[in-house]
Image (tube, rainbow, N blue to C red; front, side, top):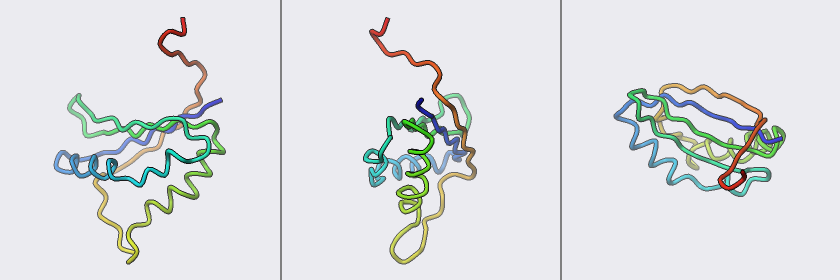
Length: 107
């Protein structure tokens, strides 16, 4: 059963462009992770400051393997050990199991 992880990032208006640039420039390592199924960066349009980072995984184990390996490496910053200041002022991780799924034409 697939699992979904949604990271809700609180991003002030003056940091939104930076956040989107960072995601656009990301190394792309998640796409090659075993068990990775989907990624979306969702921009708020309803007046809030919350972006959602949506990923779907084949299993919790696959997500944990990526999180504890490639993801941690990708968030460690440059070779000099200095990390850039985060664009988000807060985050909250939500986790779900996919219990129903539908796709176009699957009627």
